[in-house]
Length: 144
Image 1 (cartoon, rainbow, N blue to C red):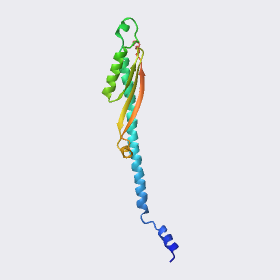
Image 2 (image 1 turned 90 degrees about the horizontal axis):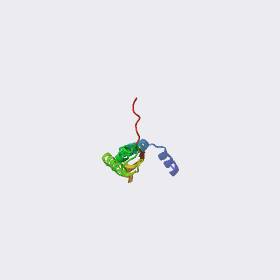
Image 3 (image 1 turned 45 degrees about the horizontal axis):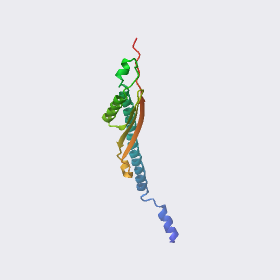
């Protein structure tokens, strides 16, 4: 038997090939599940950031300037109170961020951090998601 025939026979054997295939496929499926889990959590963090920003803006937009209201100006905010109310809501919702308030509107930039479960294997411990929202006071039309 020649050396070439011996190698050809060994290459035709498939002992262990199913084990290798199964290991690779299961590894890829586990990686896909892990990435889906962490990116799903990141999407949830994005929704929470958007909620925190929009609700904090609404809380701030409710802080009207009472003196201006008595003078007939119904859409004027008290910027200090608006900023404080929006910051309180951000803190209570577990988000961080910045608030800018003027006499006309409240702008909120919120950040929510989500801890990852599988991605720390590759060095990603948290994912930060941000959202921005602006709110201004409005007067509701009286119901007929």
